[in-house]
Image 1: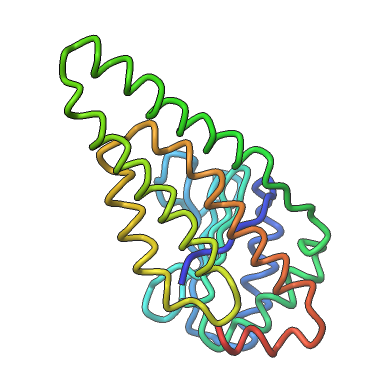
Image 2 (image 1 turned 180 degrees about the vertical axis):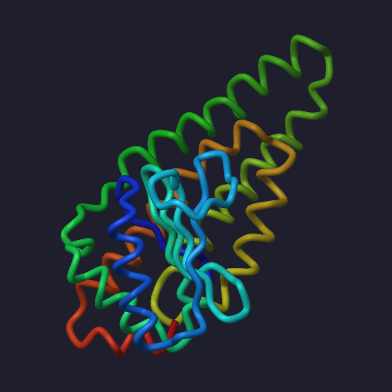
Length: 207
């Protein structure tokens, strides 16, 4: 299952409140605080990253400086109270826009198709251009599969989507990093659906 995202500046009170709320349901979870550089600290005033981990030490929630990550796969039985807390904090009111993700993806396509053509012809290696186009096709196909995998009940497509995406993205890195904003938008959109649905427990049980 792919992680979900929402935008929020780092807020130590938010993280600790969520941790205390989830602890009422599962005392085995732990709170790990880190500096912006990733160094573990104990003083909340020095923290720039907050992680809530399950009994297996896998993060179910991570709050960075500008964005938070929710991993429902690692949340287990804490899915419902976790989503309830986020809804209570108004995360469901955040608007989800695909504009930035689409723009960055279009730029990626232009870089590979346009600059790739210029580079291969200028260096007399035109035979590599079809390879670049094939990588581009795999990347876009992987994005399409990811979009489908983020739909309710389609999590089984997560691994195939990542494989297809990696086949095209790795050879075209770092340009393929331009596809990340669209992937994160998929995650924000699904979290928004989970928080906004009626009878929220229905879909959560299937994820």
